[in-house]
Length: 204
Image (tube, rainbow, N blue to C red; front, side):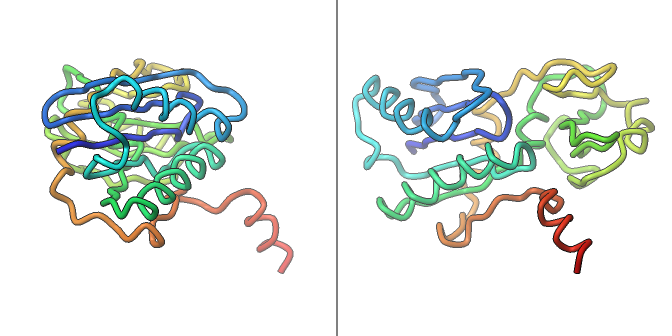
């Protein structure tokens, strides 16, 4: 199976082309602004390094959130466009589950993304990526009890957290037989309303 993996849910753009059990080529780059203008040229450059074209892939895996509202939207839009144009299977992946592939020595892995004002997007996973506590928008202090047997993993330098060391093959292997979704039905999973939506609803 040949796959394209897309993650733009944070300030790191992570892209990989995978064939069966091998990462043929990958790219991780910190991008603080203008992710939209850089992702397509980067995908093109990666396919120039493998012996097949983008039309020859079978599946697109895309991280659809939670995370940066703009970043998530960029990755989802690109995945939808490619999947629709080439009639390819597209499988959404949770950004928190992807972070949870980070090896830890504790019973649980607790991936978290800073959502500001004391809140985080977080979940709790065991060593086999089974969901112990589902992904949610939650006060940081409410996940602290899980850290007695767990390790906090975050790119956002949360207190007592470790930097992620993600394993793209692990997440792909887990989800490679998922049914996938229709490209038109692929949407970002923000876990909460955007600030603009919250402000609009508060005025209604």
